Image 1 (cartoon, rainbow, N blue to C red):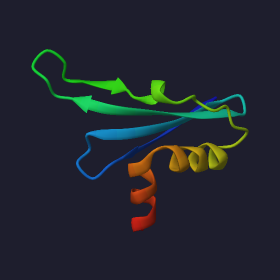
Image 2 (image 1 turned 30 degrees about the vertical axis):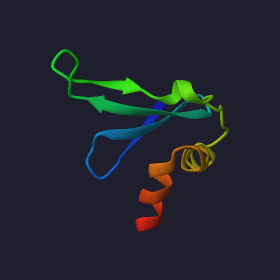
Image 3 (image 1 turned 45 degrees about the horizontal axis):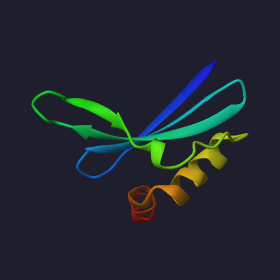
Image 4 (image 1 turned 90 degrees about the horizontal axis):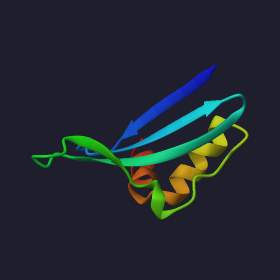
Length: 77
């Protein structure tokens, strides 16, 4: 069974998707491009490796450590 959790930044133009299947979890960062020929989500994770983690909590921690705006969102609550 696969699992997915999406976290957006304040203007909803960036998001982190934490996903898992078969006990392995990872994350992917994307930004939304609203250019006239795009209007789509574009992966940003290529700038850093995508970790393979043994739990959702570890993948979330890794994402917070690697994605600057996500750490800021997490500290607001």
